[in-house]
Image (cartoon, rainbow, N blue to C red; front, side, top):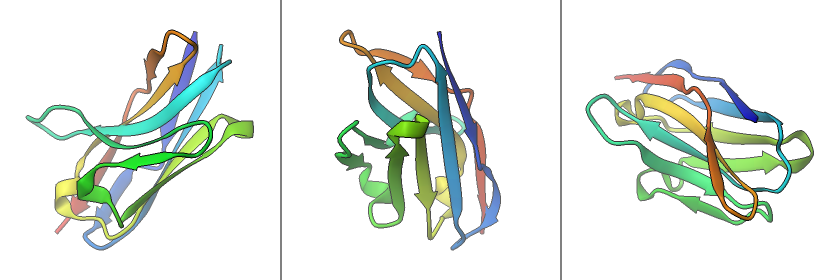
Length: 117
């Protein structure tokens, strides 16, 4: 079993910043990709950013230049630094981990990010 615990969400005004953290525990050998997804009300879950074990990053166009993903392999933790937040960034943010040669996905429970205008 793999457990993912997110933290750092909250309410912030437009233009503000938040930092999300996600700690993985349990059977966490061979972690490949770690990433962040988000889901706004009435919309599909979408990729925000992800990062490989070697540090290669990938971002959604909507967050490029504003969000930065990073990971600490020793702590099995992935971070998402979110700057210049906009009301359209409001969503539940989910951490995702891909593990092992079969590429099995694991998800966190989500953390709410609300950006007020």
